[in-house]
Image (tube, rainbow, N blue to C red; front, side, top):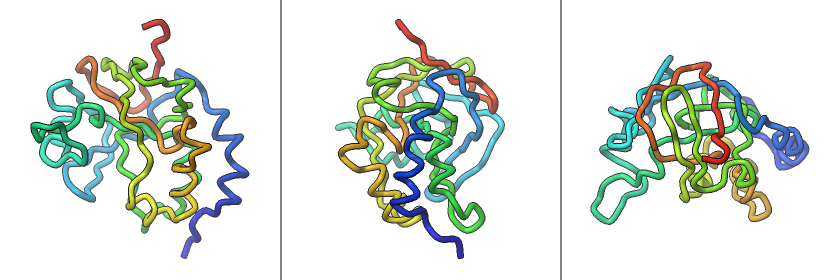
Length: 186
């Protein structure tokens, strides 16, 4: 059995995680989630303002809802930094992928991606949400208590180690290999 990452491992790797590119990194993994626990790795995803990722559970069973019961638009798309994924997802055969929409070697800190920041990916434009991704109980079960505590630590909050959540600002298609471009001055 593969051992979960330790706090020492995570703390030793933090400086490397913080060296991730600020913009231009390619999408390395795209995940479509039609239902709870379901993961399909795909070559491309369509994203829309109205429906998030059509066919995904955001439209039918979102974990965060508006007062009217519809899905909160700020959780339509999730971006996970590859360096964090590589640290915590050690057993890729027996442990499920976290389910983030896409993975890229990207600095997801508040300094690089403040709330409201626009990001271009493929023909889509995303907006960084005000909803903070602090990792859920499933993150703790899958990747261990140390990984859970590390992404939630108050001193790491501004680093957004668990990644960022976004709304769709402009409908489009995101493909594997598309560069993730931070739109400065937008």
